[in-house]
Image (cartoon, rainbow, N blue to C red; front, side):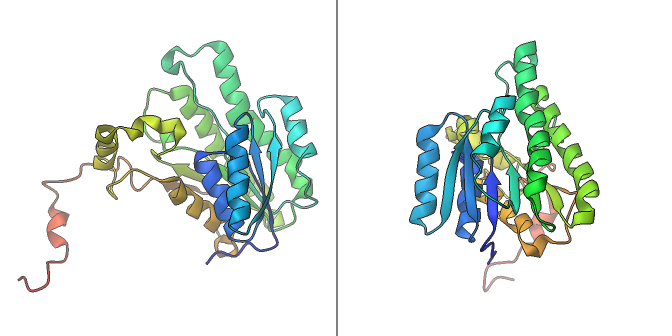
Length: 263
């Protein structure tokens, strides 16, 4: 069981979806969690209530990470003298896809790339040696999808994590990146369609759609002492999304255990 007792954590974009699952998972392991959100006030309070009902400790911080004023508000409201775990989860997807406007492109990079960079920079004076940084990326960096501006921002996240790991290694601070696949959250509401979910399951090695808790468990591990010798890595947490052909014609399927009593 992961033990984060006595540690302070900040999770950005933690009002719902993967961020909420991460915040609840870290709190459940004993960390005091600062739950950041931008506009989802109701959902953020629900996240904090869930943490406290489960016996955990947390607080709320509202800030728009796409602006300098928002970054100021984030650290003004943090209220932690020490920060042991930083999870850069907050991000946005574009609406325009390949027809993205310059304004939307700039906003996308401000939230997904610029904010995590400066959050780390401003958090470092609060972080003791041996602290943990976990960035949330995406499987979109290895799969050619139409939302390529979003994928570009996550590619930058991957590079940032690798470089930071090398720079901060002297302090024993690990920096790792988690890359989820298609996960059932509000950002992927189209997965509520049974046919869409079945299609995704069919191209996933483990045969189902991802859940927020799948990602949260990986983050909790990376935040723990058990992951002390892992840094600078991009860890795919997608259940094996789009690894290759599946189903009939796969000779390895014949090697599964036979039912009891069969030959």
